[in-house]
Length: 300
Length: 328
Image (tube, rainbow over all chains, first blue to last red):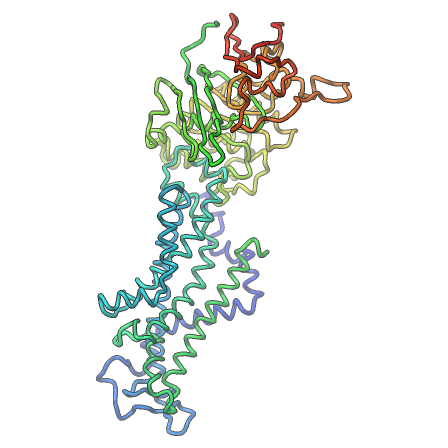
């Protein structure tokens, strides 16, 4: 429509917003963003950045096993960060492993948001018995650690990325359900929700068009930080052997692989994946903290 | 009784109670009134008198722990208390609209005015996108918003309180409802623009022959607007009458008290008269007349049995054992 040409685009509006302004002035927010974007580039362009596909057995050479990083004696430029027991390039393993770690973190977060926010909206908006049932289930969920749920799933169905996701989501949704329920209760008493009700809008439309956008802010903050948390939990699960299978190794599984030989002086196989986990979680938390400070009106 | 058209809305013996931990709150306890098409009815009373709950009951929006215990609400021949939620959605907004006290929170902060106006048309009419836009601009012009084409793209925070309430009125009226319920529509506004908005509302409903229920504690505002007035006290009707008669000669001491406490009626006096005491805890109402503890005319009988609403030959009704003299 012609009238819309005067309206600035969403991007233009974002660039002049207070959020963008404060972002430009916050070193830690910029650092967090740079780290996250580097990781995204790393995992998407992954196969082009590494000479070797560490999970193609034909490309592996057992004679190349246990090579140290390039700056140590015996290291070669071909394997910047050394190789593991089977002659896998540690750098290539990290690139492929980050892919799985980041994928699990993001998908588990999206799944948790979707389930948690929906249940939270329903509980908060309708109240009564439905609310009581949903929130009691949430309480029960909180008393199960994700490790226990992963163990149950593993023993019943075997390992797999999907089982890890289920284990993470079944614990992760609770925090969204609680946050969204609280925010929904607050928004519900606002007159614009009453006004939407007296306008004859169906409940589903009131919930998703009017209530949801007004409870998104706390959601965005928690979701950002939770990606980091999920990557860490997944790493612990994999380290304990109840995480991803060996055919789809995440950063956590790489640490476990190197752990057996860690005390023989072959430290690089475990330590480098560990450093990368630290780096990505650090980056996510930097950005998450910035968003929390910016989007939470109470901290202003 | 004066002959009138068949009522558009007829409320009979409405009881809306809230079952709380501390006891049953009888927010509306046996309220009856009729409303003719195009009529303006004022419902007045102090805070906590159950005024708003009458409006919400008609809308079918009583939330737990509240419930309509008894009574009928017949709108245009349909008994609203018996309709399910889906049928009520067809009535809300299209047949009966409602506006609220606080224009600051009655609009969703995240959507433009145009979006919120258009939502009503999408929901309640078959108009196409261009026709909807034209209708929205017309409506904003009608309620006195300057440059309506530009203002369609503005967000609620870009409007002043009075302008927002104009937008709220536009949203309520755009689907052409037959009844508008206004719950304290000017209370949150600057005194200087209250009268403007009341005039705007009156013009809007008269032009479309929309009936209006004006719920307020401001008897002065109601007396300039309404054809008839219902006075509520503790969830019960204490007096009903035509505005002129009720203002000129109230029969119930509570109505008298409300009238006396309007500043304009007492210019020159050193101290504004007020009704002594406060509204009693609605969970522990006195046995007799609920107004008796505050009533200057109360006698032993008032504390023993509650007076019934009696209608006199002019159509005035009041619930009092010892009514004030008929001066009308």
